[in-house]
Length: 298
View 1 (tube, rainbow, N blue to C red):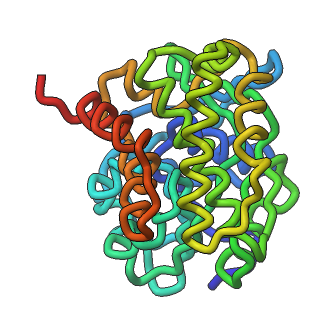
View 2 (cartoon, rainbow, N blue to C red):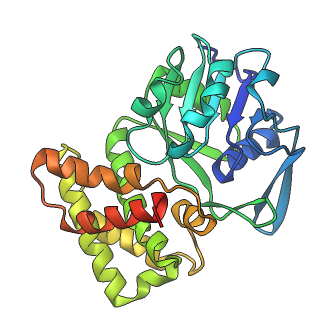
View 3 (cartoon, helix red, strand yellow):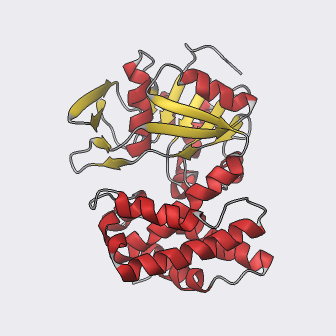
């Protein structure tokens, strides 16, 4: 595994998360190779009233790749992993590190078959980045990633060293990943209501959200994850204190009529609940609704 800062880096999926990572690297002179579905000659990140342009042609065919990369940031949705297989085949070699910037706790298992030669690193993405109607991305907070404390993850940290994207190497990575999963799970309510963070100040929505978060926490605890009873209220409080117009990726996909990441964000709670014999009555209602909203028919 290459540990030099001048390593060859590629970003697959220059959407909200991918654009943010690309911009952080470009800002310190490490502009990555950009790979995606839509041909563009640059990316734009808006942040705190200023705009940053990441130059470079977005490659749209794996046939344009002539060598493997040292590090690949995979920033496509979980629903798009198979569509990204060609990029991973072209970019991933025996020494390549693949950092999976996706929601959920199953990143390694879901990506392994498409990037088997490489070293796969799951990540928890903490920063709020939203795609805008003009194709730019708006970053509404500090960029930060949490990775497991492994040799491969240290390659990712080295690549981002000196950038404004903070990297935490955590021994308790699974606990932090589950905490983010709870946050993502309750955000599914936004996709069903077509409402943004402001809705969580409603007493009825707050009550439902808190009950759902406690259900998710019970499943996490059954999995051996040490999250305290205070976590549901903390997550709800984060939504309630966020800007009222703050969205989430699953809401963006719902508004655009794209498939939703309902299974990795919500379905997993019901699935693991069944494994451990933990009742999940709220999940049993939300998951079919999210699945139907995503996949139809109708």
